[in-house]
Image 1 (cartoon, helix red, strand yellow):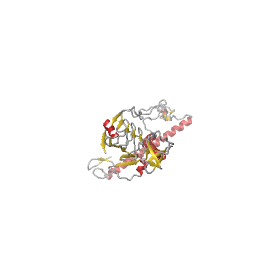
Image 2 (image 1 turned 135 degrees about the horizontal axis):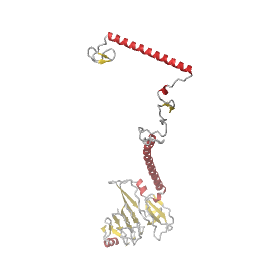
Image 3 (image 1 turned 180 degrees about the horizontal axis):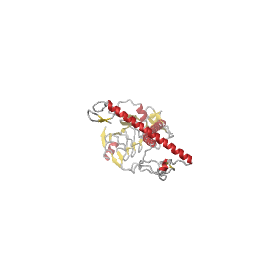
Image 4 (image 1 turned 45 degrees about the vertical axis):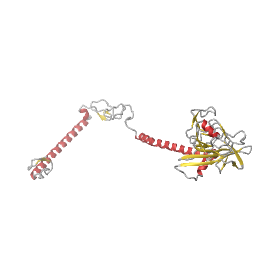
Length: 369
């Protein structure tokens, strides 16, 4: 360490770090001489110590005495403990000992070979994160698969059971027309399902709204589809004398469906529940020749606005037209049900006809034609 003769600051080296002045040459030579003298004296001392130690060891060896261990001279035990010479200490536990308990170790370590519980297992964390992603994906795929399978099954059922489309439940014909078989055919001209009876007549068992929709060419007004089904008086040269339950299905994916049905005069009797819960039927027309409307012939048709009844109909049973089934009596047989009057249905008939008298007796809307 030098003191600068100019600025007075202390510094190391040969140049002042504060003002840049170099150390005077005479001071450097003096410092060098002092250092050389110090080194020479140290070498002399080391040589004397080595000579002394050599003489002592030679004397001891000549006398048969082992030299005293340096550690023993200073009061240390020469026995090693845990691979180290300790100064009068008993053997201590090493770092690898199970009973070692260091309070400076991180929380979670114990002295019983237990795992470090506070450290999160990275692999398990990744597995957990992966599971949170994979499980919802798998569930979504399963749901979509089930929906697709369900759609395919439904479409196959519809395709393989073509003659069940739109026909509702068949209640049978009257006593005079025994049905020879439960199988049904389709009249492609009228879109009517039918069965041939043993007496050579035909019973219409339903209408095919699906194929009618596929062939639909009429104009759609305000997203409303109008389907017109004219039940023929004759199919394959055989007279249509009865109709079963007509409860058409709705093939539309969107929009409003209105169905208009015409019943030929060759059908003399409209049986009970023929039009029951036919919710898309907007209008029913009975042609001249129909004679009887049994009780509950047209019931629970919520969209029905107009029923055209000719003078040929002379017998109209209770609640045959213009009523809804009330409460939980829907499944009860005819005659045990409760009813409410339909506010929508209008009867179109000749004044003084049986239909006129029926409408007045039941406080129904009637218009004359």
